[in-house]
Image 1: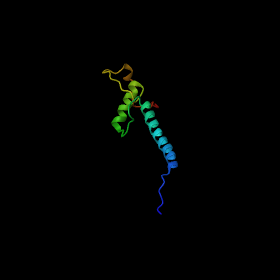
Image 2: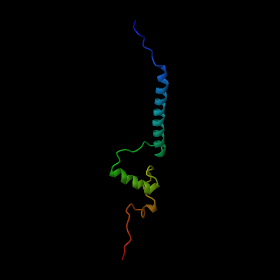
Image 3: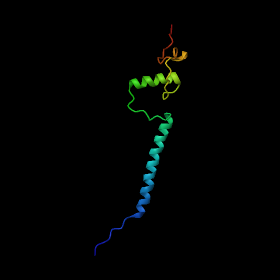
Image 4: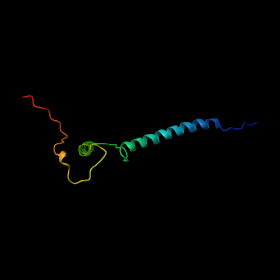
Length: 90
């Protein structure tokens, strides 16, 4: 007489909990990154040009994730340099 295969229903509850925890973690991380970047997707493959633009945006607006669309920079941008100079010792 052949044995009948019984589906293990008790394993489904554990798999459901593990799957829900993974989905909730992924959704939460994506939502946090979107909130942190003011609704924009997170940055990846950031090269030297992107870093320079992020520095410029930071000096213009105070935040690397916000750009300014005005054609003329504010007057404080003239003295707000990304270069850091040391005082002369003489």
